[in-house]
Length: 513
Image 1 (cartoon, rainbow, N blue to C red):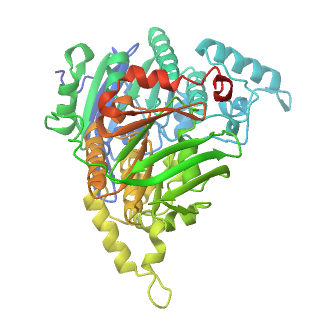
Image 2 (image 1 turned 90 degrees about the vertical axis):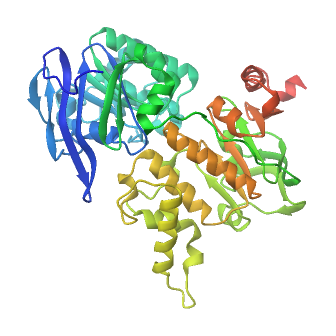
Image 3 (image 1 turned 45 degrees about the vertical axis):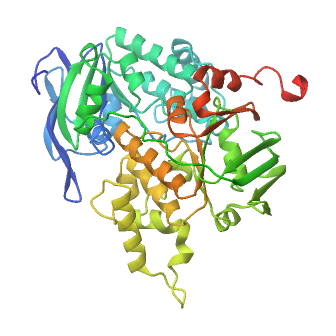
């Protein structure tokens, strides 16, 4: 293992003894890091370990309390992100911040439009965007508005924007969380090309397989402290996990000891009216069962959950609970029918970012906190929030902390805790462990299995095949808006699930029938 800090010109970026505190809690403790030019350097650690905070200090979003940054041996400090971008440091954030009502071109060149006299040079801006996309092998129309793109396409636009600054240092914070496997390969090709051009890339990810695919070196943080840096060739998955969590994690998934019983929910002929459309979805969910939903991006998995929860307009279909037809035409009615929906995009549809943890924890169950004269019982809200912070192991100074200041994984835990306070019978979980580290994932898996053991019925949409195979009882596969098959988890393979995922890509179901 290397010495913690070297101030040498061979390092493109050096970070020395950086400390940062929020609300009196020290989240970075004398962290050091050295990045060589022409390398992909992965930064790993559990949620709350300080990875994103360290990079935000580098990028000028936060000001460190102590410590220093060096570029090729010379000290520097950025006052804000604009200052960082102008000096060759770009960052792609885990949560996208884009102007969705404007075009791709506008978003890439925002704040630095080329001009011709007093006017914006639209022709040059369009041409530069096309050249950038050609270089990165991105196939999108620059004139498309961002709100017409998928999350994965918007992520690729943000990565292209970072590259457009001709940065010498690029920070990628969980860039693959919304990308398909094909798009991940495209991103890795871009990263390798930039590395070969001498760019230093800091890559933050919780996906172990990706770390071994693309990294040259790996640095581990734990609880805000530097643990170590190793060449990727000297690491194993077990060693990384041990460094991250401070203990061996022998099993990736808890024992799957829930026992499904009778049919709890039946979905019959469910179709949505507006694009993207799901067609004639039929399935049953048993009490105490964990039903996985697999499929490629665009297969209709999220839309199916939203339709069940009343967040999408139905063209046809019926939902039955214990044999009785119910009305889930709105989310409010669905909540009253004891449904809960954990959404895929927590920033856009799950969080109240400027509110504190108490508000975010209690908002879905707000009626339960009203007293006889209609006022909210603050004491009860605080008590329930503290219980959820403890049970979910949320890393926060206190319940009054703004949720936007938490790490992505801890934000996800708050949202899961919020729904548990409504005491739902059926949980619809869309990518529940996205952006969560391996240790916290295990806790979420155990929570899901424990809920199933108490008789809750759970649907889990996930793009991670090992996750579906590790915690579910059955897996329903969707393809192009249709259910292409349902398999018993213990009797299937990744190949079978992939084949079902592609079943209706080239031909619609009616034509096949």
